[in-house]
Image (cartoon, rainbow, N blue to C red):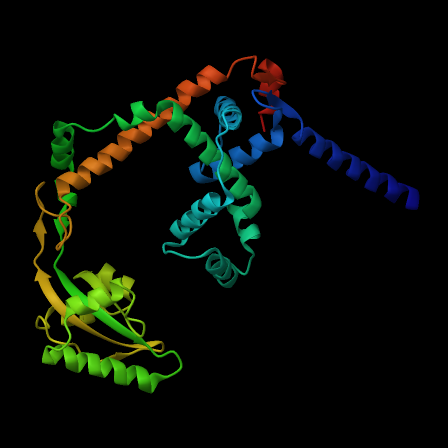
Amino acid sequence: MKRTLFAVLFSLTAAFGAFAQANLQALAVVKLNGHEMVTLKDLKDAIETYQGSSGRKFTVEEKKEILESLIDQKLIVQAAKKEGIAVSDTQIDQIYIANMSQMVGRQVTEKQFEDLIRQTYKKSVDEYLMERIKKNVAQYKAYLKEQFLAQQYVMNKKQAEIIAVQPTDKDIKDYYELNKGKYIWMDMVHMYLVSVPKNGNPEAAKTKITKMMTDYTAGKLTIDQMRTAVKNKTAQDYVAGDMMIEKTEQYAIALGVSYERIIQIFGEPLNKVSDLKETDADYQFYVLLNKYDAKMLGLSDVVQPGTTYTVYEFIKAQLTNQMRSVALAKAIQDISKELNVPANVERKKTGAELDKLLTW
């Protein structure tokens, strides 16, 4: 019985070892500047990530395209390193946390992101990222570093061509005509919100904010004075800022108040101090500075009240980014084609042999 069990365990271990070895076999070696393998595991991980977002199974030809993109990525990174292009860990940390902030919908630090993932999903960030993108934090930062290096290399080579791309006046006007229904103002109010944190001393906070409300009503304290204090960081015991609020149910949900409360705010008079509000963390008051009726925006209208940024400029920037993204993609393709030659890439699996490996 023991011999039989040992034989079964041995066969399972051998099978697992063979499977792991098969996954680590090289499909190609990139040797423009050093030697880096693109393994079957690399390809499987990439395909699993892309398939997860596409919601369908890829064909053999599509898998080959992903393999080529992995090879191209390594080629461009090696070319960048060969020319001495470098990126610091600080830069990568900044890109990483910007991506994580975008993921959760607000600005966070790396520590805050770790705490948020642990509280929400009961997992470490490594576990969370492994499930989503098949990479832990260190691997994801290494990936970001390669992406940034590649981008820097391409921009160094093709920057003039990419920056030269921009929409014409006709492009902007045509885009507006096709999408003018998107450019509207909802009913809005412009308010100035003031908050005094309790910081363990609610009585002192209440005294402070009550005096500010009284001074504003008496004309001893102005909105501009508070803006200046906040800007110059001399407002050490309070925080304040301008807010635009739309009369929509979605905006009420985002603010965590009822729609009825939004309606009430819109009915309040301008320049009058609101009632004092207490939260667990602070005391607050606000002043309504202006009200704006809903309207459809023309090209010369500003995108938001109180700014000088017009719809025309907004569309121009939007189209410029889109067109330059296309130009950047083309530049990457052109450079990859120049680099992806037999002298720089040794293909270990080709033809029917490669097709067979990609039929999973």
